[in-house]
Length: 224
Image (cartoon, rainbow, N blue to C red; front, side, top):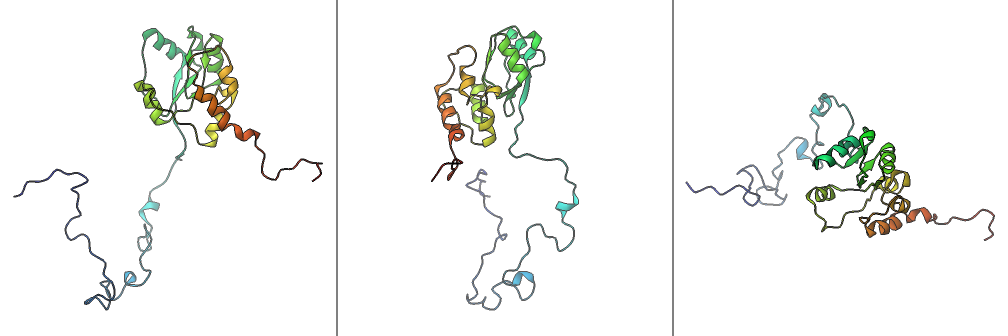
């Protein structure tokens, strides 16, 4: 018995006899029905049924109930309260389960005594006020799964991706959200050395649409 080769993508083959070659109509020996048989729907030109069709009976995809809703562009943020952050700073602890990002919440803000300088994915308005009241600074920043892994691993050699969806660009360009695409947010509060100059370039580039006018726009009352 010959030795078996290891199974990988290069050694995978279909089972013998499972595939059949298509033949043309004028091939000798197949000139009448071309291997399709004499009758039936599949012997006709353009024959066949759509995927999921089960001969007229209720298909299995309709027999099972559908509940809920899945948002393909939605993201799940890991909520982190201020009291938990203060506890982590006291214990010099870190966290690794960030899902699609970290959102700072204001629960336990009375326990926050250390000025906090942080760049989460999102932060509630109450949490922003509590952090800035202690002399800290919040800059909400857009993260991709790759940039989140780089933050956890401590990598700084790769350029982070910029947001492409309009909702993300609008959210991170608002000062009330302390987005990093807002020049006012970057200049607000105490000066910090970790402000990336690329953020200023992105803020000018991605928010340039606000100054653009639609094609063919004319001022009312102006003579042409």
